[in-house]
Image (tube, rainbow, N blue to C red; front, side, top):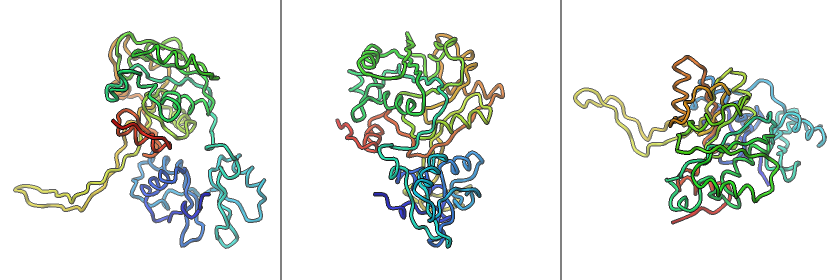
Length: 357
């Protein structure tokens, strides 16, 4: 049973602290309280919009709150509250009395039993999964099975990726394959699924984007591209909305990473004269998360049968003054299995045992 008090945050707390709290609680929403009185709600969307507006993560959450929020009154019926939550896709609904006291908070999973999270429908656009690599950082297992089939719990990582898109309406998947491709085909031929998988074979390693040229003539709409060793638990419909609204040719998903230096740092100038002393500094960076949204004309800019990274494509677009956007997600929303320490972290985060050698 969730305790709504765990979801409280003061408006003076930083955006970074809010992100960390959301990740810890596995929640996309916090209840903002000022001296234990209801003040507002803070969603991951509020934080993402703030980051896109270049608001620093050390700014207080009170500076990025929306004016228009939806809450329930203690006089509202359960049906009225449920209808509001469905209509506005609200993860947690505060019930507030006339004196701004929080009477209760109703969570999505309390009244929608068996549904893991709120699902946001998107257009059924193609998803390309780059599944041709040898997975050298995951040896010795990848000597036996290809990286996309490495299991997390009861199913392989590539199926987790497909399921995350299928739940929001995607039915057409394109896998670029090479290494141990027959094992990947045999796996999907042996399970019941309601989606379609199309395979495109790279005869040789073509980098993180080179194999996309194999899809020329087959993809004619906006499409997602994802690496086969990452899983992002975020709102794909919001990613797509940002991409379209902003008029981007390519949107890269970026995860916030927080680092703390466990030592005091020193800065000095000429002759070693100390200019600044900082105790255990912390900083945030935005990393390439390995998921992208592309417009179909970009397939014409990828050379045929050449090794070509997606970062090269991004640089090419920027050099001709094209529009490349970045959509931020929290550190906890981005899960990696590209190397063993990250694989074990992801497995445990998802409630499964890792693998130790």
